[in-house]
Amino acid sequence: MTEELRNRFNHYLGIEVLHRDDQGCRVALKIRPELFNSIEGVVHGGVTATLADVAMGHGAAPYVDGVQQCVTVESKIQYLSPARGERLEAESRVLKSGRSLIIMEARVTCDGKLVAFATGTYARVGGPSS
Image (tube, rainbow, N blue to C red; front, side, top):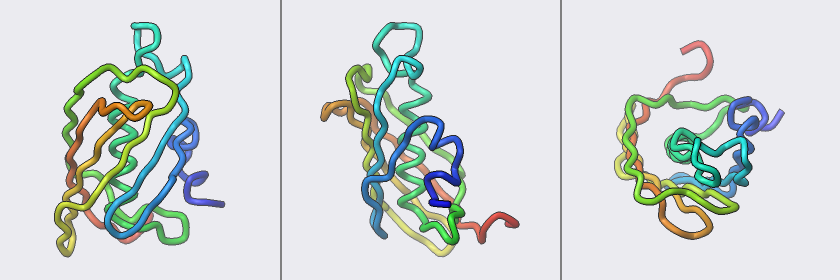
């Protein structure tokens, strides 16, 4: 089972990993009506925050045997503009990496327009039993 399929929530939302290396990650999802808030055509802020969190989490630590090796300690997001369009993308990068904590940032775009900026702290874990 691939790592994307192993995370059922990411799979349910339709999040795909486009690129990942030791400096960050880029993820995307196709916008569909089920992801709108009560304003028709505007993506729910929780979806935007989730996409940023996924990009930062994937960038903070690699998968091992399909299991994420970090958890979110804290995160903050600033919404800059309503997300309206066809495709939402988040690109993260490592700001600082320590032995157990990683500080990340992510920029979320909708059809190329910057709609949100996020930061987060992630803790390394040793797999499902940690």
